[in-house]
Length: 277
Image (cartoon, rainbow, N blue to C red; front, side):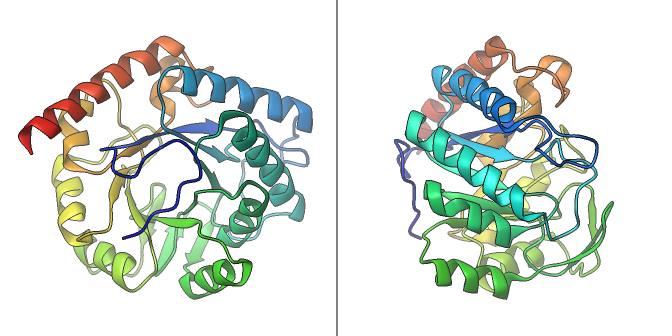
């Protein structure tokens, strides 16, 4: 499978780690937003910490915009996030990903254009999922067609059994992962726990990895210093966010020491895996 990364990360590097940047509430957010300058400054601050501590790639997410729109965000959301993604990609020259919550993959692809973003996260790419925003129906056909229309090489990173959701099409995790990888158009599969900060268990990760075949599987919630040694060797990388924040709370600041300690363990796992192979 061909991957596309604009920046310094090499696809052959084992188990890349993506640092999640939880953006402040954007201008116009339901509960009141920050100014664009404030949002950008906070995102840049977090990006500096991540890159200095060895994080391989960055992802921006409008996590502050609670309560989220179900599947169609306001037009300014893509504009703001595309501008932030471009600014970060120009300064840090590393892979950038975009997630527009709850499930606006079309807007995320639109926001990818100025930054040539490496990937977008799609919480529900196929099937129907009951979520705290209501029923969300995957539209993989529209997502893939729009990517083609824009001429992007941006990868689609799709959740299987996304957190805060219950799939109504539920033939079992293995079948869902296999469908996403071979019928839904996903370039990478994301496995999460039930909520933010909760990790999937080892059996779930191993099952997803076996079902995905050659398509990479990443853990997308709950990986931390306590479980990285046991879970990371089972998959192909991870998206990490809350584990780097004080008391693992999304609203708190990133603590550089937590990122440094985590990446130290990641490098040890990478070395061990190379030796085992």
